[in-house]
Image (cartoon, rainbow, N blue to C red; front, side):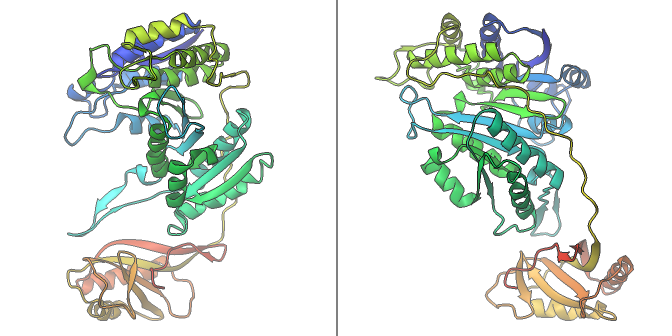
Length: 478
């Protein structure tokens, strides 16, 4: 018997959770339930995170969390409960199977069977943003070696456990050579440890186009956080419906399972909602806690229900569907088919399924780290980079010289183009003219001279080489 935490959420959440629990308990799930309150009521009671401290304690104790969709109140100041939960509990892997149910659920891609494995904790979703000038706001994109290693290794382990043949990596490392470049590099390193599994890399834009057009070309896709968020919804929709997709969020200690759709408050209390997305999340939960036989029974009964044309309003199509049912009646139909298997759709076997455990990250030996220069980011409201360069050359000293100015990543000095539009946010690079290393004291001296000359430095970035390899971007046009 496994004790789990359940949150019924908002909107249609209570209805689809009741239906889901009724189905899995009828199938023999050996679970005990601790129910907690999360979402809109908690937010409106004054808790900006949407969850109380005592609820965190229950989730951390049970380590398995089945969550229905919630409503986040409109207006500022309310934090995303999903993002908060994933980060606080270290749920680094978001897993979304996207399988077409042709011909019973309409889709342009009858052979689609893709699993999206999305990194869940870092990338732009670190949420580190600052307004730096009147015209420019920045968001920091953080990609780490530990985060990348965990998610990529998870994708290969998932492929091996479930008999998948290929893992594909999507990045944009032709542009973001440091961040996405690191993710791609680590993918190539780890792929060598799995010679039995094919691997490939796509630039995310053309890869996305290929996924939308020919999803059967892919098997398991592993992506950084933002790309994974976008493409997992795209994949679910082109498979047939976002409303049919479930999601697993896996960490080293805890796991959360949910539907990927929202709380749909306009449909609440009408016995209309399709519980399939949350049911798919619950099936993944059952595999995670080792109740594979129950998970298999539920999934096959669900497939049989879809195959028999018993559909809720969202997927009901004349000529394909046979019976339009409500939330409760759909659950009844699945329960009535427990022990049955589909005849046209592919039945499932979870005999080999289990919670995937990734070895804890082992920190690599420290690289030789050398300080090669510094970028001073300057708020300056004029538009002529030559004038700014003349001002910045006043703070040069010794061998440390201004080497480049960029604006929005485009080199504008020296030898910039008059046609390039410039904002009030300038990156100004200082380096030793002979290519030697500099010191932190040199940077302090530059900042002191900048202050003396009324130059508004809004941030700095140190320019390092690791083991002799420069680890910073140039300006476009360099």
